[in-house]
Length: 235
Image (cartoon, rainbow, N blue to C red; front, side):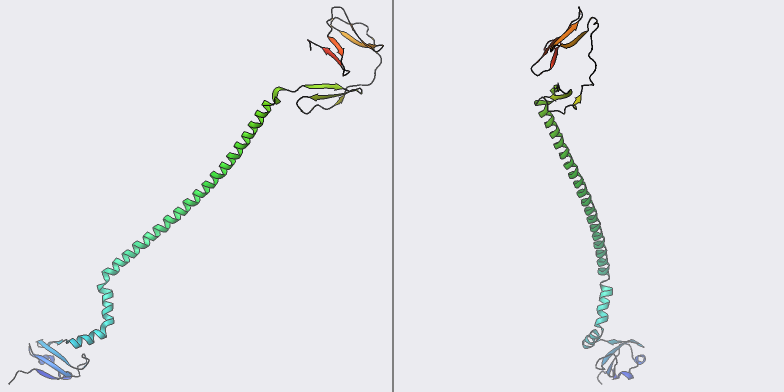
């Protein structure tokens, strides 16, 4: 009689009755097979494993592909996830450092621009002060060349009405004109003169000078301008 193995419906499969090394075929109603057919193999009484066929593998893979992909993602790529997280964290730290450095650079640039503005303002003030200094020096040198600081000669003049006024040769401001004529007094008379004294008197339209012997009298004359000049120590 040819060798045969157990076969029948899945519900008739009793693993405890199989002998070690004995196969059993479920010809129908196997819930774990898409077509109800499957093959089992006994390794010991009650220790039976199902033999997976190529078609069963395709069916199982089709039904479990989402779980398989998830397993690959969660398990097979665990190291990759850790490495990715490390790279991501390092990239974030590098970006934070870059942003911090950029903020520091912007702050430094603002400070540099402020300092440059202050320097430019100070330079403008310095240039203005230098220009003013050069203008003052130029004006001073010009006045020196023109003899401005050589001194001015103020010349007095008395009008017929007794007003004393002044002129000068430097175009400076003259003293105010004042009257030097007081109220008319009585005609005076010379009674006596001491040594070193002299007196002037107009007699008959002539100017006369009276002095005592031993008195040095300066030379006097009425010039064309009508003024009396007393010459002291020569002209």
